[in-house]
Image (cartoon, rainbow, N blue to C red; front, side, top):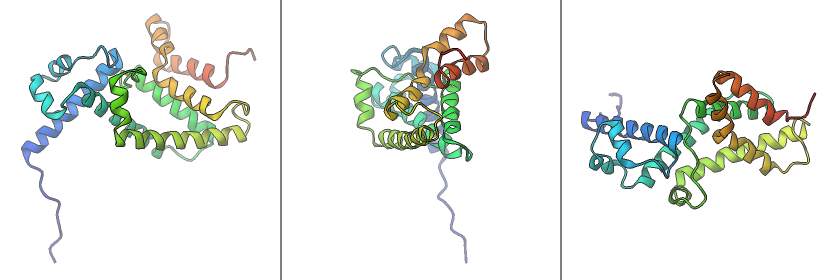
Length: 204
C-alpha cells in the first residue's frame, strides 16, 4: 500500500516564506533597538533588501508587521516554558527571568508598546498573541503561587505584582545601562539583576 506524502511546497512558496521570516526577524531586531514608534517600514524593507511595496504584500501595515514579530517572541516563550526540565517553581521562575534578559541583551526582545500605542490595540485583537499571553501568564502564575507556598517568595505580595516583576525583566533598562558602562559582561550583568530581582537589596 503506497505511503501518503505531504504535498510538495513550491520553490516560490519557500522563497516567500524565507522572505517573510527575514522581515519578521528584522522587525524584531529594530523593535528591540528602537521601539515601535521609532521603527519605520522603510528601514525594515531596506535592511531586508526589498522594496517597501514587496513588504506590504506580506504585512499590510506597520502594526501588522510588529504584531507578527511579537507573536513570534510569544511562541518562543511558549516553547521555552515547555522545554524547561522538572525543577522547583522558584528555579523555573529564575530560568524564565534569565532567558528574557539574555534575549534583551542579544537584541532579540522587542520593546513592549506603550499604553496608547496602535500596536497594543492590534495585539489585543490578535488571537495567537493573546492565547499565548494567557498560556504563559497562567504557567508563571502557578509557579509563583507554588514558590510562595514553599516560602521562596514573599507570601504577602500579590501574585500579579510578582508576575509583572518577572515580565519587566524582559524590558529592564538597567541591563542596557550596565552594558553601556563596559565594566561587566552579559553574564555578570544578568547575575546582578537576578540578585536584585529575587534576593532584594537588603544587606545579608
